[in-house]
Image (tube, rainbow, N blue to C red):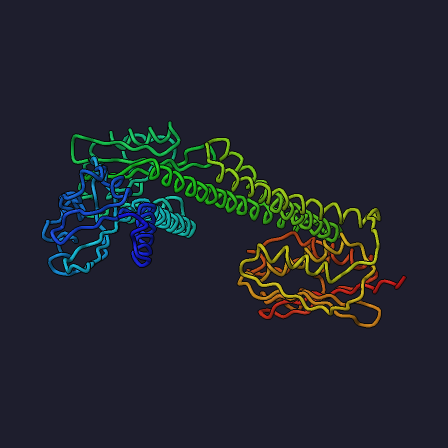
Length: 564
């Protein structure tokens, strides 16, 4: 029929049909239409691409054999096929199935809808959406979440352990329970000698695994081979054992820098998956555990050094007690001077060693192994942050030295203090996930006579302390108000607070509150001394209002700038 012979209604219907057909052919989902017998009467190009069968070959063919569906490895019976259920039972549905093409599995979401044309014969429209990629991504994310949870639990358990052996034993248990390995063994040191040491940690998940342990202890060849391979390769190693009760084994080196300090070996009497992703994740566990082992060894050396130091102090005290009265005062003064020196050296050494250890550790890690661009960027960001921290510490020392020697220079100007407060809140509010920064300052707050860079330094120290000494988070309030010819600036936190006996000496150099909370937080005790010197040079005053458990408020004043 020509277009000129069509009535307006027919022409409109034809135009609508052509648009609908074009739209269906353009969609990415496979769509097929069957008659009441289940034979194909129409399909879009996406269906041809999905099945690999041309349109001409599909037409008139029954859809059920063209579209075999599986539930796992079992093929769905033709009577339970969604198309058959829609035609015979009138059941429209949406469900997920497995579909195989050329031996390759796909995961599809199949929807059926029943259509009643005007002539009264029932037909079915089937829409097929390939969700294999989505399913694979969800599975990968799920595995990554499981691994991150395992890594966190490994870190926590090993940190809480009293010794290296206990830490390794807990890690064996955690890895076996979450990854499915039935038996785990930890070997300390670089080499094994004379089979299995009697004190080597083991973990067996079941009685069958205990029998496997007896087999391995009687013939330690598998343990020795896996341990040696992990030590030489310095990376996780897997192997199959086709003969005997042992099916698979995996060895993980525990690395402290480049040194293999221990080896974790896992065994199974059934086949286990050991792809590259699994080996990479196990390598991360070995690296993390190596850091814990290194830290525990350092703690042991520190305890030994502390015991030796106590012995030397006791011996020295005995010698001093035997000295005559004339030298007693001089000896006491020298002892106090030595203690002050030791405190300074210990404080400076600790604060310098922490960022230097991070720089060295991540630099060695990047030299030893190849990482992708994102991982390298993450390591470089850590190195950059630790470098900034080290630079700030050195700058604090240099600034105090300049102030004490009278060589500190200031550039006074009329400074917009409100803008500096907002700048500091913005900088520290970004990285403080547990804290919320708030500002209270009048819109017409007058300018102050100050060195803008030194004021940034003062605010940075106070904001940093507010975050550091309120580990549970909370609001950090930065406020400014005019009191006569001065502007009073305060930084208030909701942290651990300060006891009254500490406040009088808080702004002295190297002075810090000495309690369990502050010892865990750390610091040099230079920041507040530097703040006092800078504020005093500006003609202002600085003080603190605080009580234990009720937070702290640090307050300083600055002179209002003269109007031009």
